[in-house]
Image (cartoon, rainbow, N blue to C red):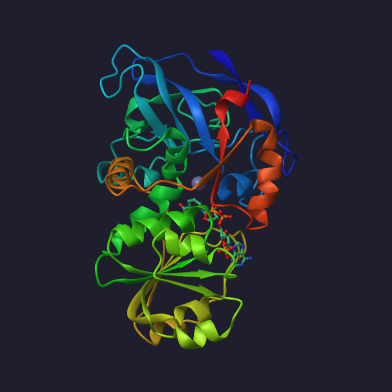
Length: 347
Ligand code: NAP
Ligand code: ZN
């Protein structure tokens, strides 16, 4: 057991502050990672503000971790000291159930161990990446390709895989008409990935304030949802809508934008329920779906895909002392497009 410096929420909705947390000693299959950068995902904010239910505090959030291997356990074969590596939303699972065998460890029948706020196999509560170091079992550590700088790679570990996975499941490619709702951390990755997959991409944002960035990142069209004519004009024009909005949206309005047989995938996870009139689905054989991150093998596939296509997150690097201000800016949709904490500032 070693103690490392971290930034933790001491209680629900309280500002994050510096504290010491414990990391387990290195087991035979464990990897000790010197964290270089940790992304701030909106899920971190939902979690520590209690949006998704009570948590155990103090809690260090952070599931977009990029760094280098500092030490490896005696039986580790996948990574070596000095390797550039990443850790996303999960740090362990049973490895034997149907979901794990299918490479969907997030749906482990025994319950995946998530990177923070989750009960680990030894009974302790996991602590996330807003810290100097982390210990993770080797099969949940992925390789970050040399082409992607570590700071711009960190957000791929959640925002990247969460958008890549449903786009791949939806067979998005040349000829697909994809709308991305919300141009935040997830949204700006979805635009880049859908464009690289060959789709025609439309951003649906609250305003046109980020239009230039959206087009530069690969969108073909950029429309404001505050302008109600958008919904009339784009009626029936998408095969896939990827909803990344962290607040409730008007499902009926968005489902109306799908063409016959289209699918709206929700990845944004507001705490409030969204009313649904099933006629919005029946009229047009439409599908409303959800998607939860992606498995470990697909996370590696996504990182390799991003490296191959020159894709990475657009980031603003901040010191640990700026975390609470960054949270307020994320909540105000004032993020371009991911805050990434420089882990050298945790100490
Ligand atoms: P984010 O950076 O805050 O982006 C969300 C975007 O949604 C904002 O930038 C904004 O875009 C839009 N938005 C925010 N409030 C809105 C409102 N009231 N009405 C309409 N649009 C609004 O957040 P993120 O990190 O991308 O995460 C987005 C959501 O996905 C969160 O709920 C998060 O918990 C969830 N998430 C889910 C998974 C999963 O596995 N399913 C994984 C990671 C995150 P515009 O300014 O362009 O309108
Ligand atoms: Zn996340």
